[in-house]
Amino acid sequence: MAQRIVQTDEKLPILQALPLAFQHLMAMFGATVLVPLLTGLDPSVAIMTSGAGTLLYLVLVRGKIPSYLGSSFAFIGPIIAVASSKGIPEALGGLVVAGLVYVVVAMLIKAFGTGWLNRVLPPALVGAVVIVIGLGLAGVAVSMATKGAGDTLELKNVFLALVTLGAAIGFASYFKGFLATIPILLGIVIGYLVAIPMGMIDFAPVVNADWLGLPTLTYPKFDIGAILIIAPVALVVIIEHIGHLLVINEVTGKDFTPLLPESLMGDGLATALSAAVGGTPSTTYAENIGVMAVTKVYATQVFWYAGGLAFFIGGFVPKLKFVIQSIPVPVMGGISLLLFGLIASSGLRMLVESGIDYGHSRNLILSSVVLVIGIGMETTGTSIPLGGYVLPGMATATILGIILNLILPAESKGLAIESPDFSGELQSEAASSK
Image (cartoon, rainbow, N blue to C red; front, side, top):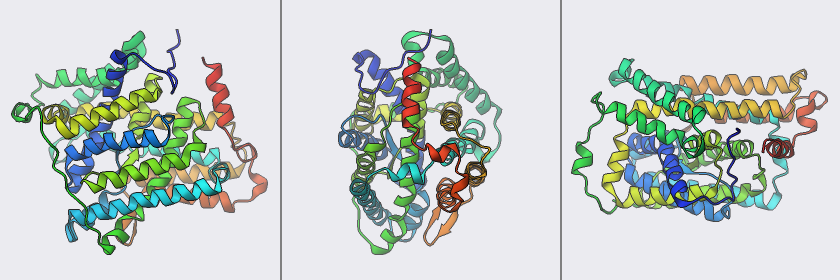
């Protein structure tokens, strides 16, 4: 029997919705906490503002787009650069302005429409970018699953990651009903329980933490130099945001492209709000899109609950926060092996379902350049320095792909360009699978 698809506007019983929400909380947790740990920001505030930002985003998209907002990796380098030379408050001021850059771009798209997307981002390009989003994180997932102190291979980490991965796959593949909708959460639980006798969990911070407490907030200062270093990175994350929205279109079988201005504005205001109190910059999360791809549960109700849980736990429940933080890195690595792979697979499916004719050199060149440059740069940690910030592999590959799409001869466009709007095909495919 085929797994039931829960559409975006469906409502689930609260006893089903809460575990699904907690599953999304677990999926975003590792990366969302990693960003503040690397940049000197407060992890608790990052969790709290990710929840608040998600709720704000859902309000602005009128509860239509299923998405979770977590910490953006694109700003790590600029934040560290500004924080070390000027200070954390100055870095936060740059992030507030970066959030407002999203808003300006959203207003421009609102004024001039979204029809340009299909012309600027044909399926041969978009599908390749989506694959890069997933496979570009492959190195991160493998490192989390295998590496220990000193960046050396640890067999116990590999074992724990494989147990977690196997449990998640098992619950997704061999169980029916509700258990089949929370395989990520159950995989993490199994991995956590296995890690206890292995001595890989430190319970001291959990025991010593209070049940209730208040967050420690940090407020921004505005420095023109810090703003010039950090704010332009918003353009890179906007490209990532568009890619994620197209993945959500593919996963859910719906076309949310007309809501792109509201989606970008929600992301930007969430970033500005987060930075205003000491949190991390926001972006829509590939990990949570991967959860939807596994579970077939697209209900935005679950994301409302996930945002509320993150806001409450991160801001006001230190003990629960430390329980989540005690999850071993290899457990999250095992889950990431599945989630990041699912994003890449969604891009591959997009290429197949769009009917792209790779007999045309234009399509072949677009996909080839994006795949090799994007995956190559992301997996080797290569980035292009631009003044005080850097252009990561995914954004570099996307920009080059857009340029190639605009300059390559039109006579070799093929099927992908003659019929660029694949949203109808996605909706038809989704309807036929019900």
